[in-house]
Image (tube, rainbow, N blue to C red; front, side, top):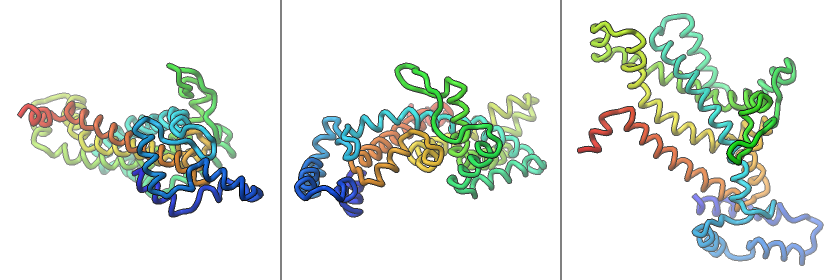
Length: 306
């Protein structure tokens, strides 16, 4: 990933052309280029980056003159807070709606739910975000349009979900970020439910006279959750990595807005550090998904014992 980013930023242009003022003298220009290390060949720059990365140094930002990792770590709590809010909204709204539409596929309410999921698939995130700002912030004035709101210190981290003002600021961006994933989980849960309820063990559970709640939550939902867990894990990683549109529209001070600002000035250390952090997050998320598999599916544990 770091090699691809180095090659990509190098091919797009020279950061010095963007960062250095046009009014700077040639001597000042040369001094800045040398301070950034841009006067050296690309393979030398990349080799220096690899050596420093092994010591935990991913470079200093060209624009802010601070360690790139420090800049990103300051924005991580805001992005994770928004991503977790979108994930919880997806789970606690999408799964029940998918279960309901799976058990009653011909009901009018189920058709309305599937119509909403089609809407969520079809509408671009940037358009939906702008429309929500126009309706709920401008016309109705119910919710704020931008910013993170009031934050408090929690375990040394500034969070906004513990204040009412922070929650109000989070509602619109969290729903905008969750809309596509919500639609995906509704359809996936519905399809899984319709497949599972036709299985022999569900028919046997009904024949034994088990309560409907036990059939739903023990026999149907648990088996439906296996593919849902995979999708949720991948989508959570994508939510963190690609929250750029939502964070830009709602001026949410997270990693997404930082990376957009960094790309605009070709701030390579920040871009590389951001993408390397995203790679690590995807690896961790996939590990957690594998662990959850063993808790949901006894066949995984049986295979491990063998």
